[in-house]
Length: 140
Image (tube, rainbow, N blue to C red; front, side):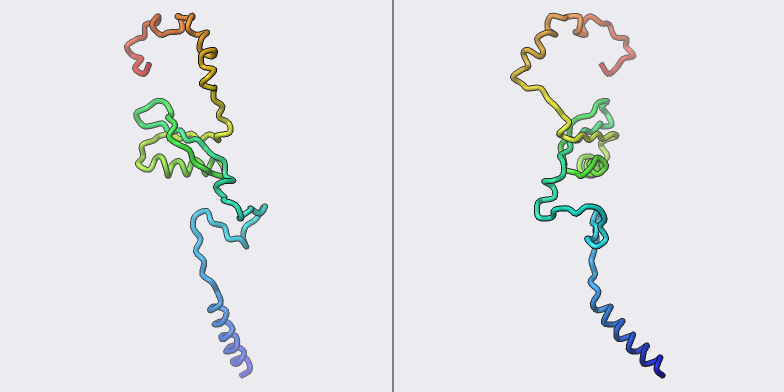
């Protein structure tokens, strides 16, 4: 008899326990704070501002070279490739994706173009007019 009362008491506790449970939905990439491991992230600032900027290059099915298609923010290269796939190749127009963190891209200054490209003008042998290409070469 005492066990029955204890079971009933436990059932009431169990019922109260189930009523106190909160249902939380998690989406892809969400990590519950109580299950998260590692260092804490500062949530007071915008998270995307902390993520590095990545430049995205896609090679189309018809092309032989990669073309710059845009930029996106991601935490690492794998995430950048996944996001680039979702954003820039939704209609399966690409066969290859390159992502490069923007801080590793270095460019010339347009003001220095004259001094940079001037030495090549007097080397006419560098122009392809002196070479005869075979008919088998299609993409030159």
